[in-house]
Image (cartoon, rainbow, N blue to C red; front, side, top):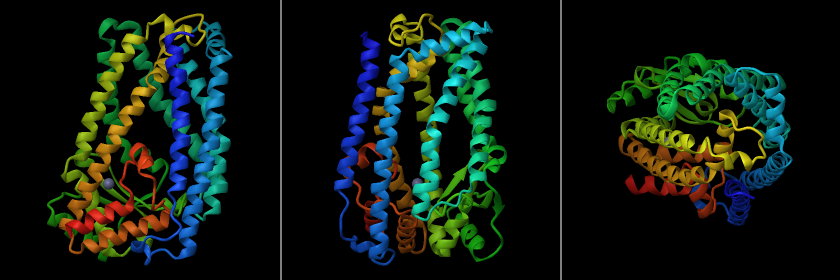
Amino acid sequence: MNIYAAIILATLLSSYVLNIITDILNLKALRKDLPDEFQDVYDSEKYRKSQEYTRTKTKFGFITGTFGLIVTLAFWFSGGFNYLDQIVRNWQLHPIWTGLIYIGILVLLKTIISLPFSVYSTFVIEEKYGFNKTTPATFILDLIKGLFLGLILGGPLLAGVLAFFYYAGDLAWVYCWIATVIFILIVQYVAPNWIMPLFNKFTPLEEGELRSAIEDYAKSVKFPLKGIFVMDGSKRSTKSNAFFTGFGKNKRIALFDTLIENNSVSELVSVLAHEIGHYKKKHNLKSMIISILHMGIMFYLLSIFLTHQGLFDAFYMDHTSIYAGLIFFGMLYTPIEMILSIFLNIFSRKNEYEADRFAAETIEDPGSMVKALKNLSADNLSNLTPHPVYVFLNYSHPPVLQRIKAINEVA
Ligand SMILES: [Zn+2]
């Protein structure tokens, strides 16, 4: 076995084992007694249900992960990558078309294989815990729209990357980098108007107490708010959330209808204050800069490894090609990505504390921020006592109890 195969195999196996260990730690950290802070939003039945939900999802994750690992290894070691390559090569198309079809078929295979799991998750698990509102029709339409978007957005981008590596010589990685950054900025800019309405309905928030409370708050912190929208999150799930989309002049806030239903006006303002806090502290900009730099490094490394024969030998390939190299590099890059994601999660958790702090300092009653966080946990049956190691590796947000503690210290 060559060095590339060894690295990729070791990564696949070690991340699988690490997931199992942290899952077990996490399950062991479930506490029987409801934390005092939550007496007003949970009863013992709801608390028991939330822990059951964590257990069910963890078990399901274990099954999905095991299945995914087996399929990946089977496809790899039976020479599946080379077999597919021979079929597509036989059609004797231009190498860019061959690459698009090769990667397209792999993506499609992955979607088909994971489909039963996604059906089970939505229609059995989420259904059992009372979250699911997705109809089979919505589910199928989502799938079709997702594939269609992948095709019309991902296709041209991929064609561009392949073309640069075929024709642009040593600086191909720089062109790929620039093109991808421009692509992502455009997609983010048009997403609120062109992409997200494909999946959800966004209605401007009607005049009234909530709207004026939000506008008053935004004015008090000098935040130019362009649009406040209600999103029909209840179309798919009873879970709730709020988020900003777009950037520059195209910023808008979307509140899930489910969030509005379950929170008072001052609680909703505190949720919004948190989101505005992210903007005020420039978290979005910083994250964007980090991911642009990350992309540059990735394309540079890609350009180095793309032509290494050993990488193709590791996957039993008869021919080297740029498109297959992209896939194999993606797998080789996973350990770096795993380590990087730990740092990104640390950064993100720090940002969450900062946004909470901003909200607590600028709203009238920080108590409503605490209440909103508790409502959110209860509505989503969040795990109130995750294991610290699990949090360290996987959580982009601090556990809710720690957030409450930090807010209470500010207030
Ligand atoms: Zn946040």
